[in-house]
Image 1 (cartoon, helix red, strand yellow):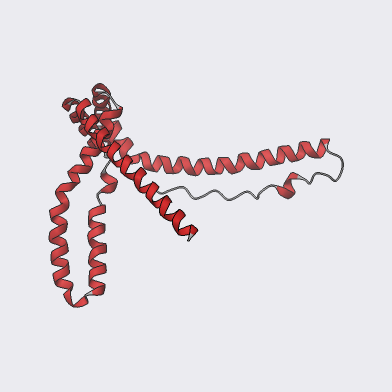
Image 2 (cartoon, one colour; image 1 turned 60 degrees about the vertical axis):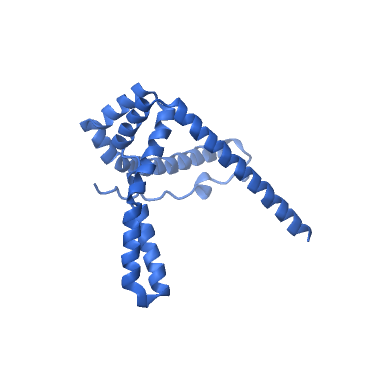
Length: 195
């Protein structure tokens, strides 16, 4: 009984916090719309498009449609054709809402950058170098992460070896094991990513 009352109180408190957060976010959104000039919002939309920021979300609607079709067909296999027809129609009707995501991304950038900064961002990312960075940046990031992991293991191994050697010199005999006894084994380097 005591647990149920505590859980109810906690749920009520969490609901109150959520309602407060929603009302504050709505007020902040209205305030943002009033403080961001239309020209800055337009510049932000151009920058967002140049950065391809929302491209990773292109698959959300098709995946939701596919998942819904699978669930409905599994429960109603005799209605497969009807399910596919209706889900496809309703999916196409929602495609226009993709623009809402673009607007939100633009609003976020417009709040963080000035119009001049947004123009500079768009100019760079629409240049040949900027387009190449957008295209090859993820590959470079993956290769840097792999290099950092190898470097981290090497640094940890060398630090353990160095400390172990120094401790062996300065500690009484038999108190400190050799660092080679306790250092992690070196891992083979991962194969480089194919380009």
